[in-house]
Each structure stands twice: as structure tokens, then as C-alpha cells.
Length: 361
Picture 1 (tube, rainbow, N blue to C red):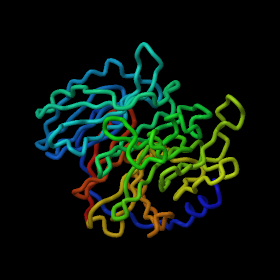
Picture 2 (picture 1 turned 90 degrees about the vertical axis):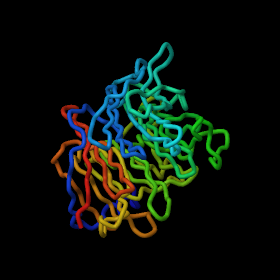
Picture 3 (picture 1 turned 30 degrees about the vertical axis):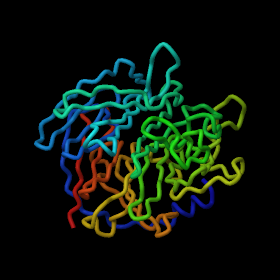
Picture 4 (picture 1 turned 135 degrees about the horizontal axis):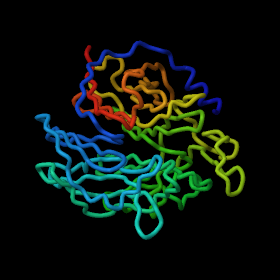
């Protein structure tokens, strides 16, 4: 960990966590990777091994049919990120990330679907983006974040390909910025490329900070140094595991300022050991008190929701606390909702749940 990241991690002061009420919304799941909420309040999640589950506002549950015959499930790869189109109320479009297996090479793909009003079936409407690398299922990403302007940000993993993170022509180890048809979004560093930032290991979380609109990523480290990064266009975040030709060397720093000149320092770094940070989302609404606007981070090995109160400039952490410590095991996704609640999915592979955390002032 670089000196800057060390300073950012150690400057955080432990603080009392907010009081929350925990409600189990869905149970009996197997690795629900992500969760999204429709305008009518219907909750949609997907199990990494395959299959969607929807919970209607009245509490009834459906398992929408979907063609997942080409789903590739291995290691960390399967049915992953889920997001609703910003125009969902009129177009009922859903985006997902999945491992893909066909007659050609295995890759990770961003797909589009439409869902019927009764939530009984998702119908595939196209491949938005293909060619995200996959080798054996490790480091697949794949978080989808709709932006206010209708574009999509996508966090990807490096698929343990040594050169991918620093290769501007690879989609691995990047944050991508695309239109909903898969074309590069306006304002990208290279107008012909979807690449927005590079030098990442395995981006698992993306979220906009309330008020500033600053985009942050949450990234898994090796045996050390999970990171939270403040993203800027063309920013390089310093992961370069090609220390020896043809070998994926994980002993290098997560932010290697020596071998990657100009690499941007992390806002927060875990140090040793890692917590396996798997998602990130900001807390919304006044009921969170002093934690309103803090970044919530789901952790798998840490088995908790970590709360990071950022400095006013967003480049450091002032205070830190946690929720659900060990209570539900491994945490995959956290998702702050406009009504002020926080949705949480677990990642144990045995009777996993989707939770709603409601702050109680």
C-alpha cells in the first residue's frame, strides 16, 4: 500500500454506527449477486448460478422465466450485475452481466432484457457489450451503474490476465462508460473506446456520491489493500501484475506508483488482511443522521457492511463503523435506495437472503 493510501486508511476514526431495523425480504436464495428496485417497488435479484427472483410490493414472490442457456458459471463468474434502465417505467428494460459460453471463447457480456408487467418472464433483447475477458471464472467484475444522463458505467475485472489492466485495448481491469446500445459514451477519453478508467484489479462496486455526483469504485485487493477510488476520466489506478512476462504476479502493490507513473492514490485502503470488498453504495436521507451521505461497502471475508464517512473533498475517510458484523455471513451487495433504506444481499451459498436495513434515528 502506498503512503497516501496508508494515510487515508489510518486517518479514519472509529465511530458509533447508526441504529437500524433489519427486515428479511427474500430467503432461501443461492448467492444473489445484485438487486434492483422497479418504480412500483418490485425487487429483482438474480442467483449467480442462474435464475431470477422478483418480490412484488405485496410481498408475493415470482421466479421470472429467462433464457440462460448460455450462462457460464465458474468460480466468481455467473449471473452477476443487474440494473434497470433509467426509462424502465416506459420501456421495462433490464440490464444484466453474465459469464457467457457458446461455440466461441468464454467471455463476460452485458445483456438487455424486457420484463412483462406481471414479472413472470424476462425476454432477451440483445447483447449490449461482449468481449469482457474471462479465464476460469476469476476476477469477472461486473457491476452496472446507470448514470443520470441515461448512460451506463460498468466495472470489470482483469480475468487474471497480466497485461489487461494497463492495456487500453482490453476491456478487463477497467471502468467502462457506454450508451445503452453499447457504443462509447460521449466524453470518453478516447471517443472510439468504452474505456473510462484503467489499472484496476477487480471492480465490484460503483456509486455516485450524493451532492457532488463524484463517481467512486470499490475494488477487491489481493491478500491486502482492498480499495475505494475516486474516478476521473482517463485515470490510472495503478494495478500492474505483469512483473514477469506471461505471469500474473499478485505480490505487486495495488497502486504501483513506481511502475505506473501518475497512478492515482486510493481514497481508502484496507491494508492487511483484505475484507474482500464486494460492493459500494451511498446512504441516502436524513434518517441516517451523521452517516447520511456515507459510503456503505459490502464485505465478503469481513462479513459486515462497512460505513465510510468521507472527507468534504471526497479524497479521504474521516470516520468508520460497521453494521451486521458476522450476523448474516458474507455480504455481497449493498444498494442505497431513494426512500433512505439500504438493501443488502448475502453471499454464503446456503439459504442466502435479501435484507432491508431501515435507519432508526
